[in-house]
Length: 138
Image 1 (cartoon, helix red, strand yellow):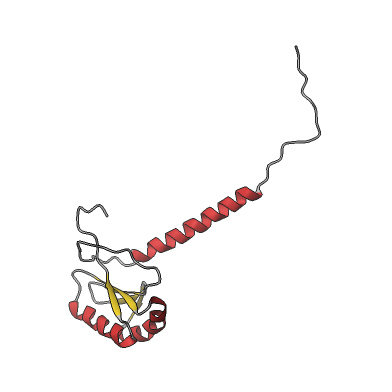
Image 2: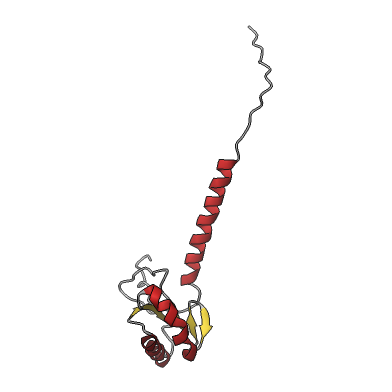
């Protein structure tokens, strides 16, 4: 019993459009997730430990104070005199909440000055940045 293969003029085709759609969606997903994770670790601060932690809100303006007293707004270096003007437009989007991250061994006086500038710029509440306690698995 021999079988003969039919010879037909049609070849097997492959539709690339769904595959391209999936690849583009994966690229968009990875771009978005990688940019959100980079914001948290933009500055190498040694944050103080706290027994409870809360996840960061993406629309929250973050003011960071390094150990040597440099001030950063959303990862870009600024000065105390410029900070108030830069914060005002961001406060409307965040509902008056500002994230404050200060190095554990930093100058407490600079942190207090930043808090004063935030208050004068219209900030109503501060979200203090901390890290999870040792051994908590976070």
